[in-house]
Each structure stands twice: as C-alpha cells, then as structure tokens.
Length: 109
Image (tube, rainbow, N blue to C red; front, side, top):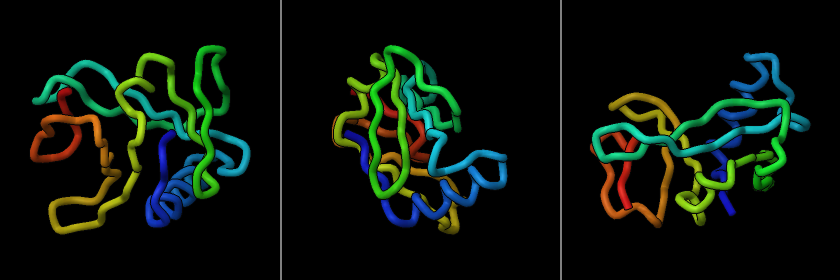
C-alpha cells in the first residue's frame, strides 16, 4: 500500500483541479523508472484510466494507481509534500530505498 500525508493530499487535490482532473474519480499514477543519480527515479502524474495490470489504492481520499513492476519498489511508501527553502515538491518516503540522492527524486535498493 502507498500512503498519502494530509499535506500531500491537499496539494494533489489542488493540482488535479488546476489540470482539469477530478480528485474523487481520477487517479494519481505513481511509478518507478530507470534514471536519476541513484539509479531509479520516481514518476508521478495524473491519470483518468486504470490499466489491467495496475494496483489500485486509496488513502486519505486520494486514489492511487501503480503498475505491477513499480509496486514492488514502492510497498510501504508515503507520499509527502514539502514546501521548504530547497524547493517545493512531492517527496517519497520509501522504506525500501537503501540510498537516496540529495534531491530525494532518485533512489537505489
């Protein structure tokens, strides 16, 4: 399962609305792809359709879909949002990551 913090939920709803998505019926697609300074990077986007192989979760009122391959890397992850001095953005608190880069956008296992 992937969890969503209260701050991340508010930002997701705000951004989905700005982009023409409906937070109650559409999804946040979270994934992992090759790249980044640590080997793997996170991918987050909005989506209206669930694919056959997707895992579907709902936490804190946010509907999340993850492809089967990415799910293995993301089990137990919490989606946070940081608006700090180093820049604003979503942060993945991933208990499976052995190493992360300084920006928090990539990781390795």
